[in-house]
Amino acid sequence: DARVTQTPRHKVTEMGQEVTMRCQPILGHNTVFWYRQTMMQGLELLAYFRNRAPLDDSGMPKDRFSAEMPDATLATLKIQPSEPRDSAVYFCASGPTYDRFEKLFFGSGTQLSVL
Amino acid sequence: GENVEQHPSTLSVQEGDSAVIKCTYSDSASNYFPWYKQELGKRPQLIIDIRSNVGEKKDQRIAVTLNKTAKHFSLHITETQPEDSAVYFCAASTPPNAGGTSYGKLTFGQGTILTVHP
Image 1: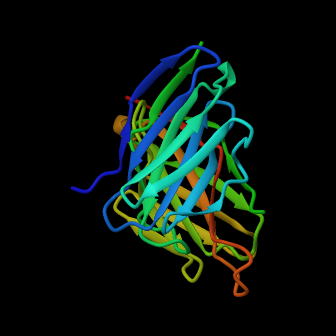
Image 2: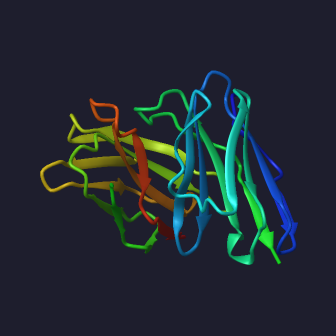
């Protein structure tokens, strides 16, 4: 049963620290998405990649957030420096195509708490 | 860009009743409308979807309807059960344009917290 794998599942850190979240998309999927979920904002798209190239990162605060795909099996989302308002659940999702979003699979998420 | 509005934000029903969640979208180019269910502490999971060339789709106790003219779509759950309690998200997918200047995008609604009381 293919799954999107995210690490860590939980992260507690202090304000100002760097946070790195990792995602392993389903093998063969060429689109990867990063979403942030909060009670107030719901599911916000932060960034998405097709064939490892960033297509859209307009939802991501550029001054502190960065997203990369060093290879087809790894996507990373970094926050530096982290702030308490970054506390949220961060989901990675992967899909087989970039223009038809059926079969979008979500990872289990990283619960981030910035104190 | 696409804007998806979802209502209600919370819905409480008795077991066995029906539940209806409605979404509207703004971009007439959107052509694919999935619904996701997210149980507490879990990941969102696709439960049903519909394409713009279809008006209704059913899968056992759940159904989705689409009105392209009015730009709204709805999720219907019949004979609700306590295990249907979760947050439900609608989404609308805008395909890339022919010129390649706009990439496909999936926009989610704000979510509906459904509670089914035994």
